[in-house]
Amino acid sequence: MSGTWTAVIQGTSVPTGGTPVAAFVSVNSSITLAGQVDRVWYAPGATAVITTTLSGSVASANVAAQISRSDGTTQSVSFSPVGAGQYRGTFIIRMYPVMPEPI
Image 1 (cartoon, rainbow, N blue to C red):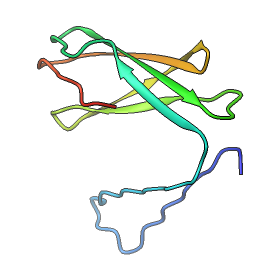
Image 2 (image 1 turned 30 degrees about the vertical axis):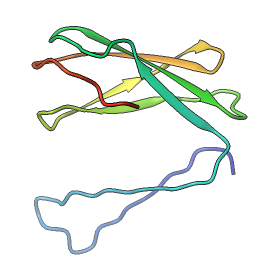
Image 3 (image 1 turned 180 degrees about the vertical axis):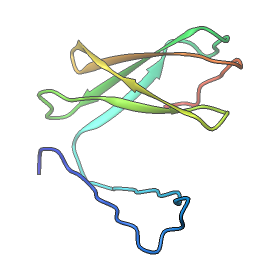
Image 4 (image 1 turned 180 degrees about the horizontal axis):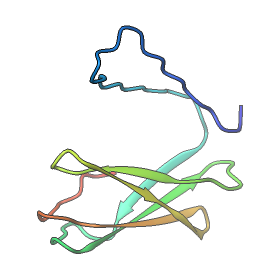
C-alpha cells in the first residue's frame, strides 16, 4: 500500500529517565535504494557527498538518512533530487578522519 506509514510505540512501566527503543520493519517491495559516497577517506572538516539511486515504480520521494558518528551522536541528512531517480545529500566530517562503511 502506498503512502505514509507511521509506527507508534507506547511504553508501559518505563523508568523515569526513559529507555532506549528500536523498531524494525521488513517489507516486500520492488523499490530499491542504493548509495555511494564521493571518496573512500575523509579528513576532518571535509564535506562528504552521498548519492543515492532510488529505483522501482517511484514518482517522487523524500529521502533522508541518519549518520551515526563514532562519538555516539547522530546527524540527519536530507537528500535533494538531482534527476533520473538520483538524490544527493551532504554532511561535514567532524573530529576524526573517516573511512565510510559500504552502503
